[in-house]
Length: 100
Image (cartoon, rainbow, N blue to C red):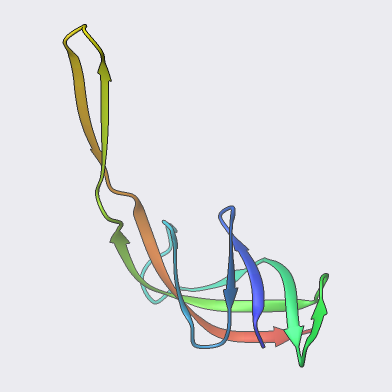
């Protein structure tokens, strides 16, 4: 059953066995966590908006996203500045979806 989960301000449709990439969690690898904000559940073409569902996930790895280049300049002022950024990410595997 697909579940809409809110993790660190972003929403993901997940099902059992899925992996998602989210912003960095401070938990260690193989740590089990519960995703508290379940927004919606779809069961046999019936959508529930305020479900009583818990979603359990395991931290698989900590990675970095792709590099993003930021270039700033002011025309005719000889000002040029280049910066790079790589977002810290965590890969989660959804293990269990339980209804209460």
